[in-house]
Image (tube, rainbow, N blue to C red):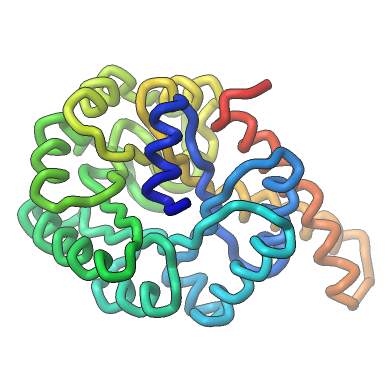
Length: 273
């Protein structure tokens, strides 16, 4: 099943896919063990920085092998692609899905760039995600810039994207206070377009709010910051009281807490207990 087909299925069933970033073998294993445990499909996400760290072909091969070894249905996705050149490299490397993020440019330029990526991805059969509105990145403040239903409808019609990350109150990274998502705005956007709607910045959003967003149209939920934070906290705690130098004995101790986190997150997006 293509990712486009899976996202449509989620729309029909009122569920969502959890899209998890991975950064090394240990975080990838955590994602796959958790997904296998609850029989959840996965979207494995890679950013430019993760690709630079692991290597493009190496990261893709690791992801594909993991999906096969653990018997998990999944897709590999470029998260926050910042150039058409990077998108092309990822498509050539076998990515199932790509995100082009031109959201900080003018809406006209965002439309132009996103439409170009859609055209490029057609011959690969790849899913294309774009972002519309202002979803604050690490270190930025979320101050307005929310997506409107009218803009979303126009953007989708003029670009042909399969999925759209919208700004309804979430932000990348951790929150200084409990975030409040604009669910009424989400409902309006959902009524205005049939495109798959994406929630970025889910780390730290209370589960009941995430569930409400899914019930009202979100079909892809991105999770990154909590994965990194949980892994590093566990690793630091292990190293603090250990003189062990064999990383093969140290790193696995940081996997279990991430698996626990992700099992909980998979259950949230699938609206199960």
